[in-house]
Amino acid sequence: MLASITSPLNLLKELFTVKGAGTLVKLGSAVLRHPSYADVDTERLRRLFEASFGRLLDAQFFEQPPLAVYIEAEYRGAAVVYASAPVPYLSKFAVEPEAQGEGMGRDLWEAMSRDYPALYWRGRPDNPIASWYASVCDGMVRLPEWNVYWRGVDTARIPDVIEAARARPPDFSPGAVEVMR
Image 1 (cartoon, rainbow, N blue to C red):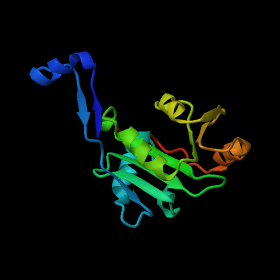
Image 2 (cartoon, rainbow, N blue to C red):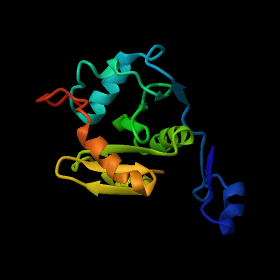
Image 3 (cartoon, one colour):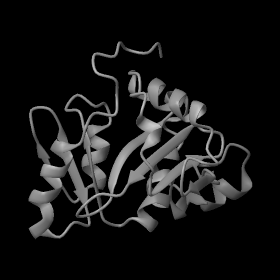
Image 4 (spheres, rainbow, N blue to C red):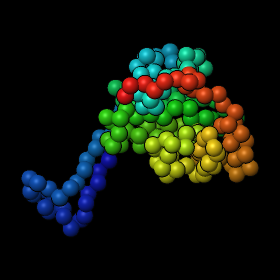
């Protein structure tokens, strides 16, 4: 649960008036962790990813076994982590456009980070949440085709992470037309 009180000076107004003073109480999102795709509705997950990224997933995307799949209970947000060297790779992180701004991204990130404090991921340079990725990473490098981000990675392993990110095949169909949002 998240509670945000605007100011201690406004406590009486918050407690004893109908209008209040701007306190926010949020229960948080129910994020479920799955060790595989076996108990996951992959069609709902596919729709979430395709709507969020505006591109068609590669037909073999769900054939690679994940380390973990984090899904908000109503499939409004999800993250997929795969085994990789030197640390796990965050392949997909998506929040339904209608759910953005509700803190669901933060809830997904916290659930995933508890299990995987060290990981890396990549994003297209024009990714609309690149600034958020930059705010949660320990470091990043800008390449022509990708921005590569990492968190909790030993300094000596950063070149390995960058090369692993560059070498990964795309998750979306080549030449895929944009999906209707």
